[in-house]
Length: 394
Image 1: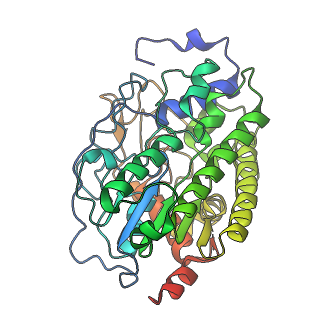
Image 2: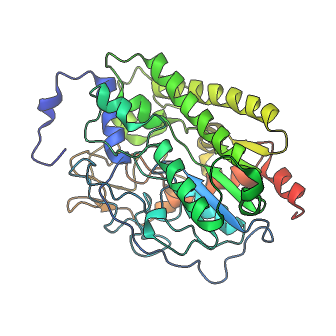
């Protein structure tokens, strides 16, 4: 998509398809890695250092700089431009926000540095981030075979697992499913699996591929990924569910007004995320039985997000759907031909009062609020504090 395109070119495409495709376009990018500033002096983590390393996986909500694919859609080369990164880092870091992501608050809470992207090539003494914006749970060849590529990011969760395997083998000869040789790499390591799967549904929306097939394949791929790392000896794993995607500004911008839920979000999109999360939790329950020696936590991103919206003023938010960085178009300050970071878009002076940053991604303030509920607010099951207690650091 470029500024030369006209919306009329897409008039033949059903609205739900437009919503999901445009969500995907914003979840993908063509950027290279950028250096990350160190934590601000004086910041106080909540706990003493319980883990030596964190290994992270997911999509743009977790990506700290891995999105370097040249196959991403044109017209969204914006995440390396200000005002991205303006709030905390004061320069772009290829994070899809004005500042820190949930994973950044996780590492700070654990008294660890921010995670470097795997593609940055080094500095992995405290862990690695394998997440890639636009990633799918299902392997890329499935979408190619079914003509569902749309110039999407080719990396999948399987790609991230392959990178992780290469990293583990290089670090300590940990290869295959040999927990004895891998134990030293996992005893003091936290595995954080950020959201993954939303892109799979979007790529296949309103196509000949059934939604149930995508759902089954996505959940199976995530479950297989989790089982693979558990077989290697992973002891402490947090699995983050999908957020209520119907509350994102772009969905609100495009969906008909009669498709709304109790929060005013797009009902159909939220129902899809809710169903995905329900199936994911069932898989996690089975994995707990199969790997009783491991601690597997479900991070309930969906309900944390919803509950913040229900009492948004308590968190200092004044805008639930309007974006901070956008085109100026009413009613949401959003237009998909004038996206954040482009020459025609402007950002608000007070991002902390906004939940949504650019139409799809969240502000640092929202990421902070969500991470607080996941880590300390009882929205993880079992609780994250229970995990720290088992480690002897509470």
